[in-house]
Image (cartoon, rainbow, N blue to C red; front, side, top):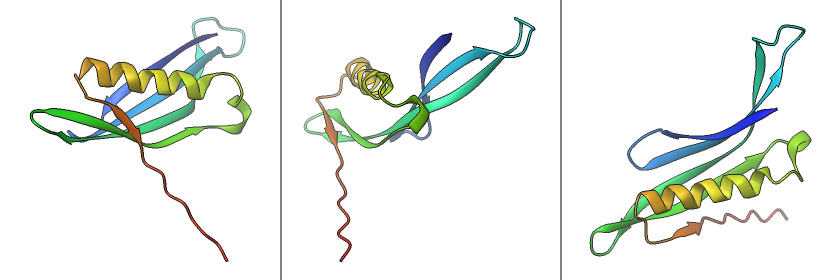
Length: 100
């Protein structure tokens, strides 16, 4: 099983980090099935005086792949990206819904 996390620049302010796992497909070893098993989105915004901050907006790991450390790998990838971009910190955006 070969896996990796990839980061895609969606816009200048948003980053999309995805976790892909590849599995052999059928009897042929040349072909593999690649599945996106999780992702997170990061928003970058200004930090005084001339740096930026990252905000973790969403993180999702599909249920069959939970409890395997994939969420932690996505979070580590977010911190690595923040470090490479010289970001001050990584914060989390929390939305709470109250249903009465």
